[in-house]
Figure 1: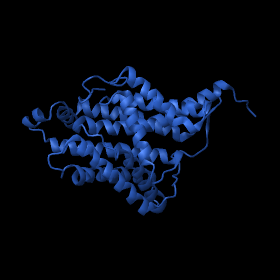
Figure 2: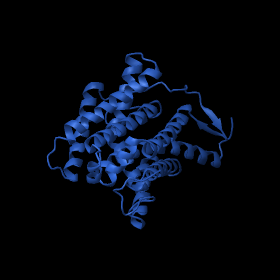
Figure 3: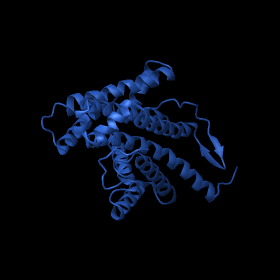
Figure 4: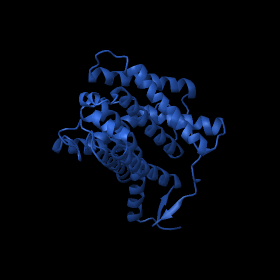
Length: 300
């Protein structure tokens, strides 16, 4: 039997932390997309992740659809849920304040969690790993193939968002709405549609995160609250309003949790990340990559 050294353990914790952090980063990106356009903190973001995993279970396990069909179908369905969230919970509010809209997203989160419990029950669900579960050995550390899918999708999402916001007309229109909604309206940009698109995009990213993490950590109806808290914490740590900050914050939080659980105790893994978050905000309230103008959409 191969002897496990301390260096190997540290590498294992780092790889696990990157994987967990990639999920937190995706959730944080969902927060940032909506916040930059509306200044709303969408606390239903974690429920998009849960729906992504649970709907994928229905399509692949219950309906028997192949992965290449079930994956985009799940993303589209959760995007529709994001659109309904905007249409039914956000848009009808007259003369909304930011606080009122945030409370509306919390109420929507509770409703979505209850609905998921009624439909799927309280048992956790598993998905077949995309590339099987045969572990890969790397310098003594064990890597599950699904880890590579998680990290790979974070890279793909990052590149796609960068191209979308910097190279496409619609992406630039969303940035204009984030910069100055009134001026954007004056030049003919439909700000309502841009807000609707922000909810759809954040739901799609949440669905992808839920799909790719379920083969690793299972998925159950009440996982959304913890994911939303971790994702929001990652967005704050990196700098609310900053896309690179959301990614960096998620990776840092995941890595801290992994090392804390492995080297000290898994019972306090959430506390370790929270302590670091508070320490960073004490010295730099705007976050690692944030600025005083956090309401502006940042370039990649």
